[in-house]
Length: 154
Image 1 (cartoon, rainbow, N blue to C red):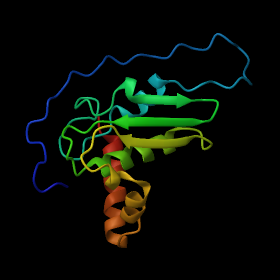
Image 2 (image 1 turned 45 degrees about the vertical axis):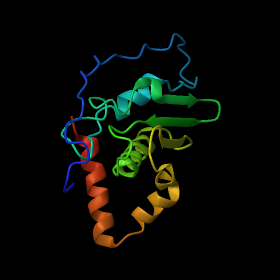
Image 3 (image 1 turned 90 degrees about the vertical axis):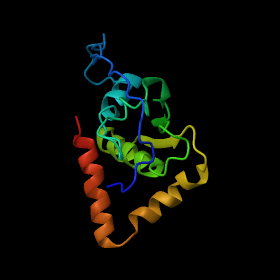
């Protein structure tokens, strides 16, 4: 998808061992199970980077510590860090994270994905994402296909 590499030599980190969540001690089937950082991280760790054949976890773009959750408010915030501060793929990364979480979480959860370090933070707003989605039908289809493919990456 990318013509020229923005970061030709990214630092690749070792993947963390997958951990399983502990079952809740309560046996009440009507109790609401809270969402935690580990669950969110498991949903997003394998998303493919738009520029390289590595996952966002391997490039340290997303970490478990960069996830904030407010179960009381049904709000999840993921702050990601691109491999370079002038990354032009930041909007696409944010969009992939947001779509993946919106498809994975209960519908009442509000999902917010933001870039922690970016030279031009104004380009990451929801206005930009909406402009991306309102493009020509062919480009919109290509963007949708790319996002779906990035979520299948392992």
